[in-house]
Image (cartoon, rainbow, N blue to C red; front, side, top):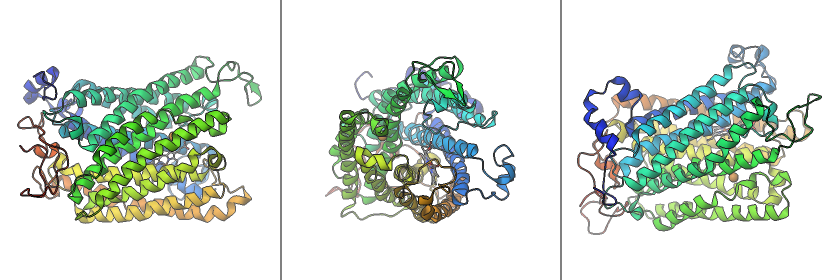
Length: 587
Ligand code: HEM
Ligand SMILES: [Cu+2]
């Protein structure tokens, strides 16, 4: 079976299969090597961290809406060191902000989008029995788990968790409290996890494709995960190195990021000298710009699958979408310094980075436009996954378009570090990515459990979330354009020019708390449907891609017979065909 594209099980997998029946509870559900179990572990971990990060944010929103007002009930529980008399200390606000950002990105979205959807769906969609390296897959989940525990544990150390923002800019982060050391160690675990995962995804995609599944027959979701894996593989190592260097600056007296003559609280810092503070920013953004595509590409992949399925039409411009995706992947490595226009990089460098930034917006526009045109003339089924997928388009559109001014040096100078930035990137990652991930949960839930989630609850969840998300984030554009800085623990109470924006913070906060209420139907639905949802067969959405040929839920090894791909991924409404979809896997 050395023929390219043939389904071959990895030797360790075959061995594993033989012993399959004897596996006890721990090997089957906890230290499992089955990509579906690992995918669900990742997804559940990601969802729990999203919820936790959301709770941190709700606390911040209290302080922003009512600066200095004691928080009833909960305030008292959080302790005198953080909220004396229920009033939030600035240090605690910083802790919440840094950890909300870190947790949402590295422990929420990435584990769910890449670890969860990538692990669960990708092997099924390419017709593989498992990932190429099942044991490494297990190790990458447990690295993530350790990283998560380290980040959570950091809240308990004296002085609390990291407070220097999710960007951990030096030299502030080097002189910050012990929480920052824990943050760095946590990041090293999380990065290691992503690197192992990326290697596994790339190998699996290339080696374990079903027979006949050429790259141009890939569902768009597979392409999105494939490009994402390369971004993780190539962008994370510099940050891993930088993380170790910052750790050394903190604990071993090195001076990678500390310039000479640094004075802290009136005392010269003894190990400061010779280091370069901006080096950290370069190394951080060399990862973190590709990272924003890691947050969005899997979402785009999910949305593309769901739109094709529910318009009952092939994706419009599939090839141009794929080429755009690959081009976008390359370009994402040469735009990072658009986060650093304020550092005085000089006009030549600024011109270079603003040009690459304008260029990288083109492939996103191509993909978004292709998805919008795909809706044209379709007889659309508006089920819950489709509602979330369709809403993704304008929400991501707002996020993307408002990014253009930030990519232009001249406009970024006044907008940089204001609430405008917070509004811009949250449109991309909150109503954007999170909606796509929700769409994916409703869409593949039947594959994972054999049951469908409740539609009525799904629609309440959707409409409530759509309205609230905009109530939360639209005001932040107004606040930002009035010039109010981000990361202010009192929302700018001390500044005269911020006064007209203060009531918008109240609006935004009530939006956020109401948004939380609208997640309750989802949480209930998620658990209730495991036992009570409508049971479904293998292909409840009448879809064309290979994962729908496996039983729901798929058994260990996934397919009863090794599947084969006979055609492209989206043969919907083919003229002359007996039904309105011709699956990729039917001869
Ligand atoms: C509805 C959900 C969300 C709300 C209401 C929200 C709200 C906020 C607020 C109020 C801030 C702090 C602004 C400041 O003080 O400067 C913030 C920062 C941030 N958020 Fe969110 N957020 C949400 C979801 C997300 C998601 C899903 C992600 C990522 C995937 C995310 C990533 C971040 C990051 C990276 C920061 C910056 C942290 C820093 O300044 O270091 N947020 N968010
Ligand atoms: Cu960027």
